[in-house]
Image (cartoon, rainbow, N blue to C red; front, side, top):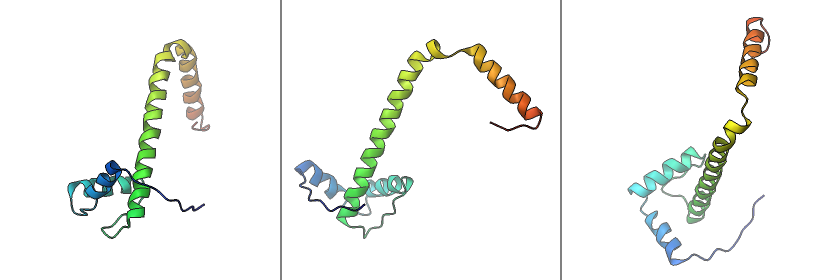
Amino acid sequence: MTRRTTLTLTEREERTLSTLSNRTGAEWVLFESIAAHLGYELSPESSEATVIRVLMAIGAQVLIDEALEEGYRQLAEVWPEVHDEAEAQEFRRRRAARRANGGDTE
């Protein structure tokens, strides 16, 4: 789905875009690297709209990563209460036995 929308930028957002207007600066190089890591291809000729879309994608990825980290932190707090070491050892023993007998690997 593609949708066109109007976006009014604040002065702060304008400054951010201005920082990225120097397509040979350190900020652009880092921006390009992060974009590539997320699957976006940028070039010095990339439009302002493309830059804004990639900035949104980077921001969204940061939110996802932070939410995962918070979830892992919460899991670590309750892990001792919900983890049964004897059950885990039995599961590992059965899995190892299946593998040794040529069974499935999972």
